[in-house]
Length: 303
Image 1 (cartoon, rainbow, N blue to C red):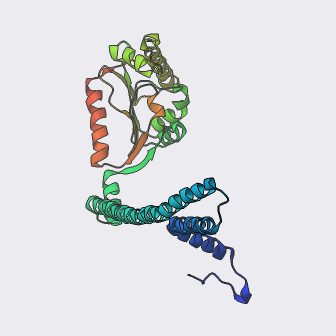
Image 2 (cartoon, rainbow, N blue to C red; image 1 turned 180 degrees about the vertical axis):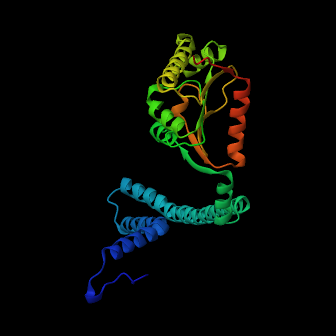
Image 3 (cartoon, rainbow, N blue to C red; image 1 turned 180 degrees about the horizontal axis):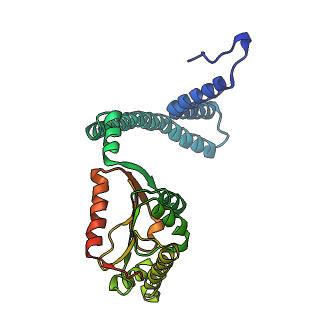
């Protein structure tokens, strides 16, 4: 037993008592079945001798004694055999479980080593992908703040924006910094816009969904962006409407990408988001998607 926790002067630490208690619990857990067998055997043995040497007062007493003696004579060895066998079986089972656990841990370790042979390889992999974060939802305030500091390009691929007015100051700041601004929104007159309204419905009765919800939100976003452009005389601001299947949601802020998806039953802003930095093989997948949709989308007349 480890006595390293003993303090000088005969004072024992609290951790020592905790470890001692755990030690006894472990020993009891391992040997309690044997203790049960010995205790029960001793108890039955005492009863056996008590009945054996007691004088029966009547024939009924003699029959009762013989009956009890017969039970005890056969019960004691039977119980000992059963409990001993159970203890041995448990030890064998524990050994098998321990071996299975070690094999599983070894397999996990081998898989990890195959996918990333070292921590440096894992860091290199993440660096090459540009993946900087995975978030449980869209953090609007952070993205709006980053848009306002852009100097090269702001690109948005979405269905519509909730509260588009909240983007005004950031978009004006980015435009004044010389950044190009491109906004891709879903065509409000498309069947896809109506279908997205149904997909957003959280219940089991999609027939109750308002098919005009998403189209109305898109029109409100376009109108608000038009007002921002005209009110601030922004020249490097373009808006296009696309009529293709929804793929991904993108907010580009210079070299940073915030990307999400379009789950059923909830808004994309409430789903998981990825942050990717730099020009990497991962960011190129999203940027190529934006460019492809942009090239086939219809421009919005901003005058």
